[in-house]
Length: 579
Image 1 (cartoon, rainbow, N blue to C red):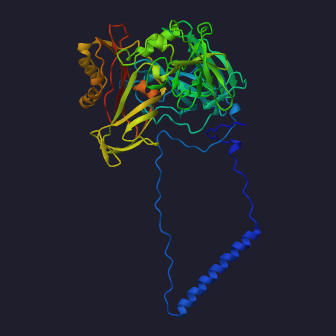
Image 2 (cartoon, helix red, strand yellow):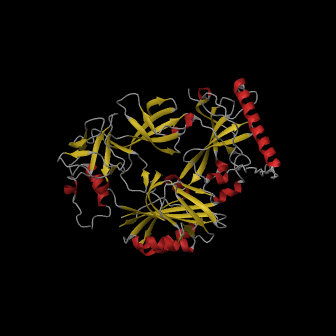
Image 3 (cartoon, rainbow, N blue to C red):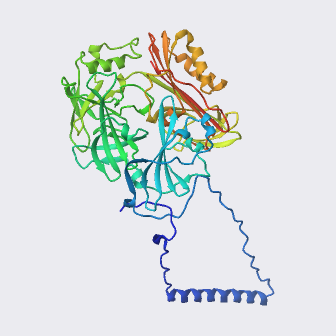
């Protein structure tokens, strides 16, 4: 039976201590005889030394051990655990509006934060066995786009407890008032989604957890139930992708937890290895050695807005058999391609391939491109034709050099961990992250070597937002001045701006126009969350996506601003170039 840990209440029968065990009399007699023998030997030894005129050794009193009272962190309350059954939790069928909770610091701090607690909305989603209420706080969050950050709070009379989540950000805690809210230290099983979901119907397959999303279930477009599970239910959505040929659908799977929050899942692909290289033998009997993924656009995240792309049977009626994909449990799965150079799918893939390659040696025309193993199509157990695209033919994009600066107020040992699959780093990123001695001027000491910042490259574990319809279009002659002005507006100092331009200026497009699109702190926290100890008081994370254009396009302008740099400050910058 699944059980849940909850705080104790007075007069709770589960707190009655167990009966004390009885002592075996035989063991008691043996213990007393042992004590008498040892005492007799000690007396005899002392009598002998006295008879020989030798000093008798003295017994020093037990030294006094100082009592150290541990310091309890403000956001850490550890009551004795009780374990009522989780089935007694009463989950609401839908969230119920709840009055605002007094858990935040003075709201004037909102001027220096991407969060707006004063506009948060609260919903009760459950009643716990001992009467506590589980409440969700949806806090408006301003990245370069807008979304809500979700907090779970247990309300126990006048007490409030923050329920931490595996991917929660420590930056948000800076706005929480430690005198009004403590940390909930127990597990509610229904709020811990499994790493893998195995459906009971073999025709549906199994799914692995991708990431937590702030999407609301009510906002999902036409969710379809796959299966109910004890801790929630799996749904999928399938919708025509805007700007893509008719017949290409975005396919996403959402696991709806009992509290109405959502977690993204992706279907497992038989024969797909951890390095994304499927075990495929092509029709020409060659063995695949290339990575494939589901992204139609480039990016620095492990996910895109659509986790999968599903192709309608009518759209790919011209598909041809192109090989077999193998795994250990089943001999083979047939895979397909579309090879007609006039087909809209081939045209879409070719347009992506052309980006940054047209002037390179060996550039393929569309007829030769259509003959390559640039994609494959696999039919999953639910009947969806899923599209996988070769990394060799995706849009060329340079995702470059995120660097992290640390400015404590006094010399401080700092631990930094990045939520990303890191491929390059300096200094070397270990399995426990970086442990550095940071100075107020920003200099860092790592294993006896000095560094101006921490450098990493790789793919973030979370969502890379698609903001290509936002930002600024800048004429080439204004490019350098505009980027420098944006860096100042986003909070970088002179040295940080100079470092940014030193790395990126030689890489800026030379086209007549350039698109500049910015990701901010909240966006980066979702893409590649940082765990920093001690916590920074001020965090500025920015990331520039830029792309060369032959002619101007219309974009929704972004609002650029920065928090005031106070206390221990962390700054990070990086960039993504669509070539």
